[in-house]
Length: 446
Length: 189
Ligand SMILES: Cc1cc2nc3c(=O)[nH]c(=O)nc-3n(C[C@H](O)[C@H](O)[C@H](O)COP(=O)(O)O)c2cc1C
Ligand code: SF4
Ligand code: FES
Image 1 (cartoon, each protein chain N blue to C red):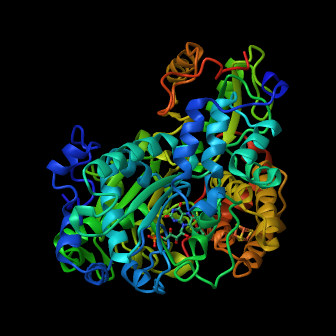
Image 2: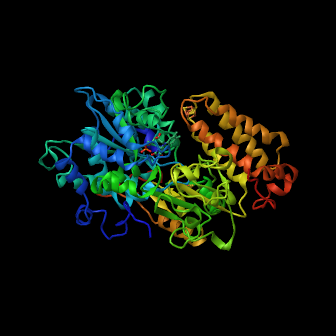
Image 3: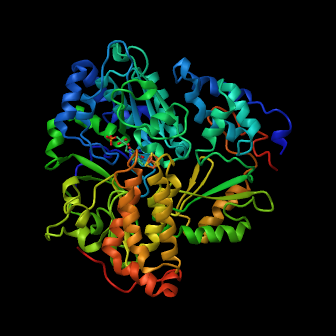
């Protein structure tokens, strides 16, 4: 059994209340940080831990914190990214709904480290029921002296608020999130300036994912070095994976980074194998924005080594034979899955969610959806397959935010690994367009 | 619609909640409260935000009406047209599709008589809306109705249980700042 630094108590009765959470060691990190450490010492521990942002990009959290500008007399903010909208990802929702005080504790300790006196949790609007849970927990934290003026008699003040979005995937992108928090449309900002210099209300701001903030709690409690002992190489600590699709036991799992992918999929401790006794066909390992891999390449790297659940191992082989850890949204597809249909579904998602500011993204996602739609519905041509690759290339590197690439990469990967299946959709158009049609061939591995 | 006949007003409970929300942001940044206040407005006025309701939101926050319109039209949660008593938001994204969301949508269209993207069912009870990933992919397929998630709707029995529960709802469930559900909350009927 791997260690559970975040979810050890997740199923304890009443753990969503202050009293029970506190009984299980809750809020110790706040006491330790505020009473025995300077803010910079907290930042130092987070640096030592090697924690990498859990929102998708994997940027080292301690380093991000040390970039925060600190001009005299200007307020700065910590904003928690709880927008969680990347298809396949549902870890933050589970963590917040069941362990609201863990996030609040992490927010207090992190805000202290950054010198923020007002912090926000931006939660996607669909999760209003989780916002209610968080607001109740925040009220308890105020009542017990962990929020508000002069926390634990230290002279440190902090107000914490939860803010709902309105339904827009793009608001997970950090600058779109800040626009949205200011009451505007969620259009990503041009960078620079980066949020660390000009973020919320044009003031220095750190934006971190829910899970990154929660991980600060065990890091401060046990020390950054202890945390860094878990994992492999630069992938330290534990990570939440949300497993879905054709698995026997979908759900969220906290794993020690370094677990073999094969064990994660097939062992009874985790996903328990593929449903209905079927074979695995493909996996999208880190949310819909990362390249899809066929079974053979998700279990083993091109060099034949066991694929591990680490940032490095999942990306081994680059975009030719590898993928990315991303947000930890792990989507498994069984042997009956139509890759073209699935790729079309995801491209519809990105087209729907493009904010429309940059034409390569706005037009490109529209093209991808349209071409994939006609391939899936029996009206495609052979040239369409290369057209997909060329449209994807034209989006890459030509946009304000990474949504364009998030739309393009998965399409390119699907064509690379499943080209025969795309061609079959042209040569056997009628058959392929039938609901539930199954391509009889195999994936391309290199 | 009734809601558009007279100038809409927020209930006292909602006004108090808006006042509380405004303490979350710097005074000169009242606009930050726009999304939370639009959510309150949609809950208060029958599940959608008419132009009149949006004007009320603008007035309440001291914004120009256009500042509200451009935001309400950007975010998918705000319904800009009248809706049935219950809006069923069906997730259609990949992981839910793998576990039967297409079949669920077809089934719901059949038994409610409403069409996705179309008007409410003839009895005025149900509007069907397809949405993107709701962050509950491991419990697919999913329908959201107001603040509630109905999960694992992969059997006719599970769907029936949801519809029965909704049919039996006279008022919408109360929100935390309300004592009870507003008597006029499901005003379309
Ligand atoms: C289109 C898009 C959507 C994103 N959605 C999320 C999200 O839902 N949650 C999240 O934490 N980060 C999301 N991100 C990443 C954020 O921009 C940002 O990198 C992250 O919140 C930083 O936190 P971290 O360093 O703790 O991971 C998204 C990025 C893009 C481009
Ligand atoms: S890449 Fe797409 S989503 Fe991002 S800013 Fe440009 S148009 Fe908007
Ligand atoms: S795909 Fe339906 S909840 Fe994520």
